[in-house]
Image (cartoon, rainbow, N blue to C red; front, side):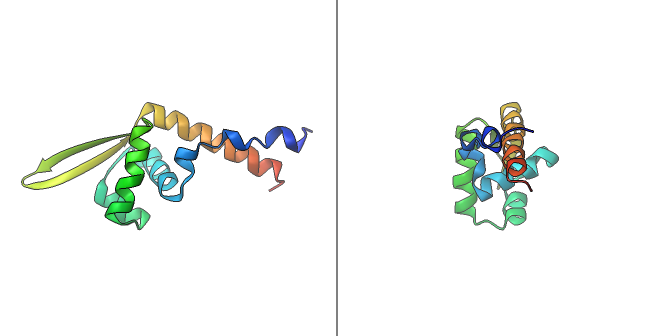
Length: 105
């Protein structure tokens, strides 16, 4: 049996992912692969501005790729999980699992 203190490594939690909206984006994209802005907004029940801010933070970290195009005259924003983002999400989930296990849950 390991010491609970060994598994409790709060520094292993990626702060870029840990926010509720950003975590939702990462979780959704990990299974969907890609989504458009309106799909994410509806799934996460976020406002345009709020989602935009969180996507920018994920994009700046290299976790998602954002592509803006036009379909006819309408703008379309597509978001894709990058390889770096997928690896970071797996590390995040592993770190959270260790914390949960250390708590005895």
